[in-house]
Image (cartoon, rainbow, N blue to C red):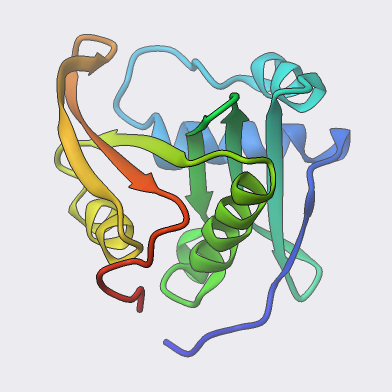
Length: 162
């Protein structure tokens, strides 16, 4: 698929429901309950330590990222791109924006977890220079193992994202 232009912006209250539904349908599928429900998304949106980023293409919601910023580390808590827009540069644009923002804030590392069987996500992060740092058994509601990955900022990626 070809790359498509996207606009990145901070999330607004009107984005909460769409982010929560995307999380449920694309990230939390197969898990018990709904942990990133609208109330939790609203809390993240209000938190001074959390950035909720939205990507739009042609005026439509295409993806989002929720990142918690600490003193020296950032944690990408939730990240998704609508299936129709995947592999078109939107995810890359969001991650690059997050890394640049983190560097500007003096943060030197970004951490992320994904399901151990999410090979597409792992390949995406590896292409951006993230390295696996371990696995966490039962990370997802004692149902699934997570792979934890990390990217040191200020260092060039060893491979390039596609």
